[in-house]
Length: 68
Image 1: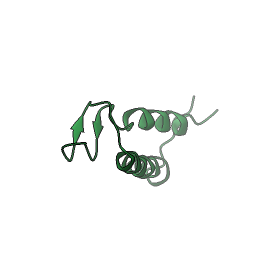
Image 2: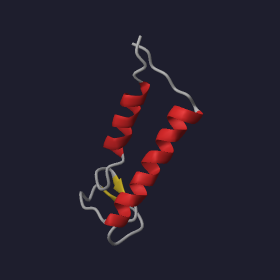
Image 3: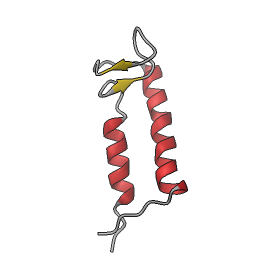
Image 4: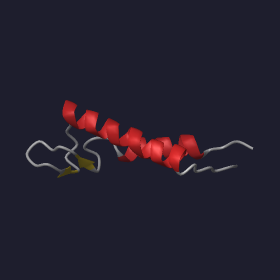
């Protein structure tokens, strides 16, 4: 049996945390923009930090597994 939690969680987080797709922190004109489909370097770095923290939380700290 293979553990599918890591690739599924990483793919979902990557999709939802793409800057500008659902939200962007910091935004161009506001601290938080929604669905503007534009990005900045600072926004990319901040979303990368959130991706790493959420991935670490879900896979290392909570130790989530999904066997198929």
